[in-house]
Amino acid sequence: IFALKKEPVAPFEFNEEVTSVFDDMIKRSVPFYMESLKRQCQLTSKFYQKGTIIYDLGCSHGNLGIIIDAAFNQNISSKANSDINEHSGQIRGTSYNMIAVDSSLPMMQKYQGRIKDIDNHKSKQPDKAGNIFLVCGLAEDIPIVNASVVIVNLTMQFIKPLKRERFIHQIYDGLTEGGILLLTEKIIHNDERMSCLEQDFYKRFKLENGYSELEISRKREALENILIPETLDSHTIRLKKAGFNTINVWLKWFNFASVIAIK
Image (tube, rainbow, N blue to C red; front, side, top):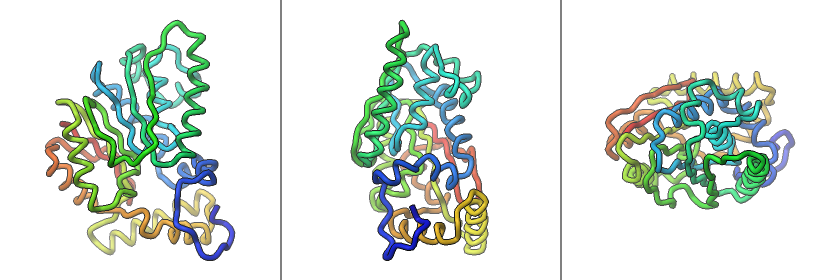
């Protein structure tokens, strides 16, 4: 998408063009992407409470949702099974409902197609564990009710900063006691030297994954004022202010961090 010189660079959006190359883009742009999804599935397995709802806010076209759905079902496809280990087995066969939200219509349409394929496969089986309900809308506008797991993957960075505090408060208020928020974000460092170091290694990561200097530069320009990262301290302070007292960074790679917060 960013390999050709087209002037000016249009602001980044999750349109049909991006949706068509999303998997390739995110695996080459986000360190430990598949590892993160695998562990989030296992954390969902551990903290899910029967009768509650799982929310995936900013779900794109459903990479995590499809893995979680596979974990809840007795018969797991070989492809999905390769992304889950034995710990996910504790929820196999458990009924569940997941609300998956994304503001991109092309992403939602692709997700719907994936769900249809899964449902066609499940129709040949005696039991179906649960349902994924798709909502095309802004993550910050979704009321959170009776949730035991809320997942926010690389989403809050696209929410306007002034709306982020209310967004986290809504999640906390909608969680059941013992429920969790799984938050993954691109971050910046408090110290300018460390921030530059992290940006340098992130650029190396993308170059090693086949992106050119031009592509990196033009994508950065397209994301200007669209993706607004914060420091890890800012995220932690906001989580504590909302009411979360048990907070842990379970994965960090330079300027990317994954956090679990327990109510």
